Each structure stands twice: as structure tokens, then as C-alpha cells.
Amino acid sequence: MTVTLGKRCIAEAVGTFILVFFGAGAAVVTLMLASGTTPSTPFNIGIGALGGLGDWLAIGLAFGIAITGSIYAFGRISGCHINPAVTIALFATRRFPALDTGAYVVAQFIGAAAASLLFAWAVGPDAVTIGGLGATTPFPGIGYLQAIVIETIGTFLLMFVIMGAAVDERATPGFSGLAVGLAVAGIITTTGNLTGASLNPARTFGPYLGDWLLGGSNLWTFFPIYIIGPIVGAVVAAFLYDYLSGE
Image (cartoon, rainbow, N blue to C red; front, side):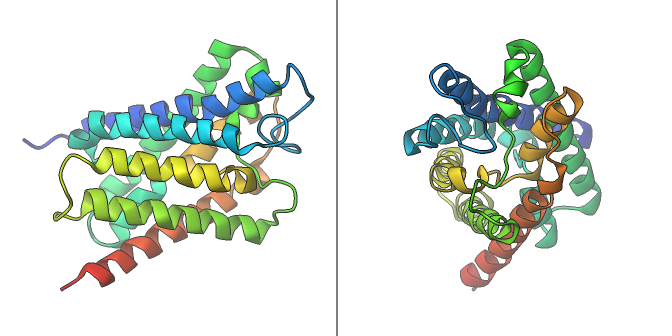
């Protein structure tokens, strides 16, 4: 049975909503918990008191669990890209039509924006003023170009796992959601305190828009990092996987 483009876009919007609400939301909650004992913001000190690895592991697992659940819930409906970089990489390798690519990307951005705005409403002003809605920015000592490279490498690994575990017809069935979720958790644990570990333009767009609309920080100057890095990383990974796995 063929699922209509409209239904697939709704699935992409809902899946991306889940990713941002629970993933970025975990970063917000971590910062709000830390604010009770030490002054910290997501833009100068980091997650928790000192940007501890344990904080990032918890946040990474929140993202990973949300993604794993979404893949098993929506994978058979839309493929559960929930990431414009993934959709564009599949289009670049001729696995996805142009019309569907544009529609998916729009749906993913809408889902991310709705998640950030609803999270802010549900949690209250502290989600913006303390948690910054989980917005991603380069951490101290990480330059603009360095951040792009880090995001490129992180998304490269993510896309390579997606290609091997979900896209390749020879992949072991039933394990794609777990493999992709664990990959995201690991990447965030390592690179979270460097760039925020977005790996996904929509994941960054939602909090940026929410912060901007609700009186938080204006972070749009960093947005190109989280467009260029993830898209380049995903596209390179998809082409390299095809080259290495080809007959």
C-alpha cells in the first residue's frame, strides 16, 4: 500500500516534534536543574555545572531513545528521516524524489518549531531564560569553522550508520532503530560540549525560532554551522557508503 505524501509529511513532522521536544527538552531540564546550585547558561559554561560528560550522556540517551521510538513508530510510514540532512543525502544519491524532499524538509522544520514553542509554553519562562530551549551553539574555544567540521564529522557517522542499518537492503531487519538511536547518543556524548551536537538543521531551527520569538537570545548568526555541517556530512557519508558497498 502506498502512503500519500501528505500522510508521510505528517509522520515526519510528528517524528521531528518528538525528537526536539524530548531531546532538546532534556538539555533544558538539565540546565534548569543545575541552575539551582550554580549560575550557568547554555552559552558560556555549558550543560550542568561544568559541562560534565554525565550530563551529555543523559541528554544523548534522551535523543537516542526518542529517535529509536520514532523510527519504530513511523519508519514504515515515511522512512522516519526526521532530519533535513538525511533527506537531502537520500535525494543526492537518487533514492528520494525532489518533490518529496522539499515537502519532507518543510514538515521537519514545522515539527521542530512546534516542539520548541509547546515546550516553552508547558515548562514556562525558565525554559527560555535558563535553558535556552536547548539551542545549540559553539562552546568556548570552538571557532566557527571548527564547529562546522565537528558537525560534519558527527553527521557523517550518523548517516553512515543509517545507510548500513536502515537504507541498505542487506541490513539485518529490526535493528535499524536501535542502531541509529545508539549512534546519536554516542555522538552527542562526545561532541555535545563542543557544538551542542545538533547533527540536524531542524533540531537547531526549532529552539532558535522559539528563543527569538519568546525574548531569548538571538542566535541566528550560528545557524549556518548547523546547516552546512550536517548536510555536507550526510551527503559525503551516503556517497562513500555507496562506493564502498557497491559490487
